[in-house]
Image 1 (spheres, one colour):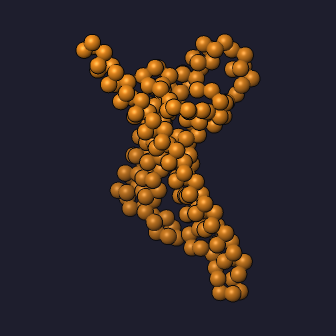
Image 2 (cartoon, rainbow, N blue to C red):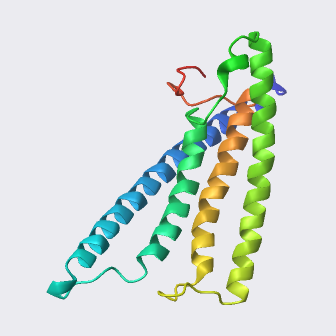
Image 3 (spheres, one colour):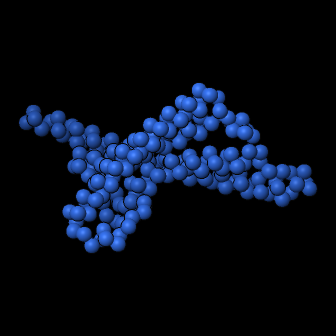
Length: 188
């Protein structure tokens, strides 16, 4: 009886942690969406200002810098949710004709490889952020410190790592997806 208690605790703790990562990924995607809405409004204002130069208006200063930074942040914040929902690109030409065990093997190997890629990406993003901060690099027009963009993207990258770890843990049976969870394909 005592031997079952730690494993029950770990499984409940694991389930709660995985559910937290899924919710965190969802909120990150919402924040990424809000960033894109803000960028869209800024672009409309900038283009409208350019069109009304004769009225004394003008473009938003540094609009292209804001688009570069905002798009990068949105992408990093969208990717974890996209992965967890199964919205990433797949090539089904051969895959759909394989037996179920082979499909699960391919998914497992590709997800572990992508986890490694995300971990390296996050590490390099961190190193880049430290370097940009150390050398006081700024954008040309707004003079915004570049490391701010790296830091914001790093948050999304860490959430991406957590998403890959959570999904990989479910594949190894160390936890389960949140109740009622579905993917783009409708499968778990």
